[in-house]
Image 1 (cartoon, each protein chain N blue to C red):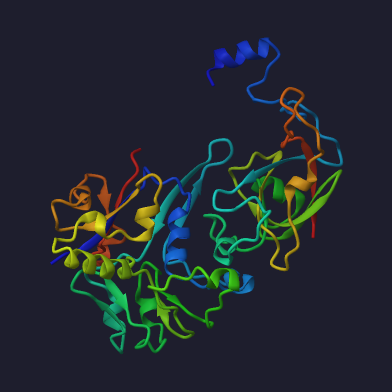
Image 2 (cartoon, each protein chain N blue to C red; image 1 turned 90 degrees about the vertical axis):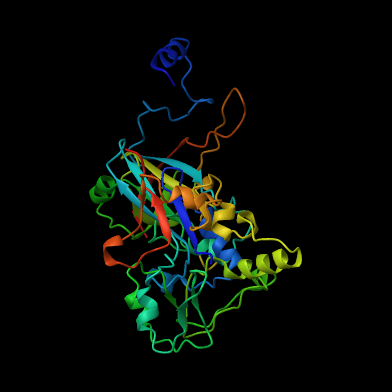
Length: 227
Length: 157
């Protein structure tokens, strides 16, 4: 069985936020008003976190792209009273919008703060409506949403591989963020498959995971910047 | 650029910039406009001539507290000296024009400069274009606009 995961090389990340833009476009992320955005209610399944240190002219910025960690031991799944969020057999933590009752327990349980509540019904201007992705459902008001590792792409890739009577290859299934990354900082694949790049990269001496001490077993690895 | 090359160019009367800055680093700003405006383009935004998709305007930069509104980056010490808080709305005023933006205290900005991204409008559609503040001077060699040629001041909006 596959175990999909991601390795992000922080030395390669330039903070261009192409991953954020690709994710929002791919997954029909709705916007909120400027006032609500100021209250922290903007949704961004993939978010590049920036840390600024030093003072001019010796200022440095470090970037950390942060999707859902798709934990092997996900706290969000444990607290969901209606099994709306679940850990799939392929390692992807999914969200069933029709089942979600909007209690937000999962958003509070997630130590990575990557689950987003829809405070409002999604609204899309005409200019955007024409470009919505038909493979991704639009989330209604009152439910939680999150990064799915572009699960709809996996379904499509599986069907195509099955139709061609072959195994699923690494390039067949890539989330939008990994596909768009101009520096290939984001690498995606099956963590347990020796033929996939992530299998090797997660063993790099620089590899680490966020808040490993919590025992959540995230499947997103980071390669720490070299000094 | 290596120091030796810079010194050689300087000896020939040429600076490191590919075009002449009307406000060269040694220029003394006029008293009423003490800050140098540096407009720049954000990689995720268009030039401002087109309307943006909402999700581009909602997260135009990696700085998480900036949404929708145009902003101008100011060194924290400069903002403190002016008595303007981080996040406050300000007018950026040049001799030619002015526009309204949110002040973002950013330590990567030179204390005597303002970094001004362009491409965003106010949510009500009002233009907020730092390029309109430029004084229109051009580089004598290439004829292109001298983008960093404007001195400005900040006023609380």
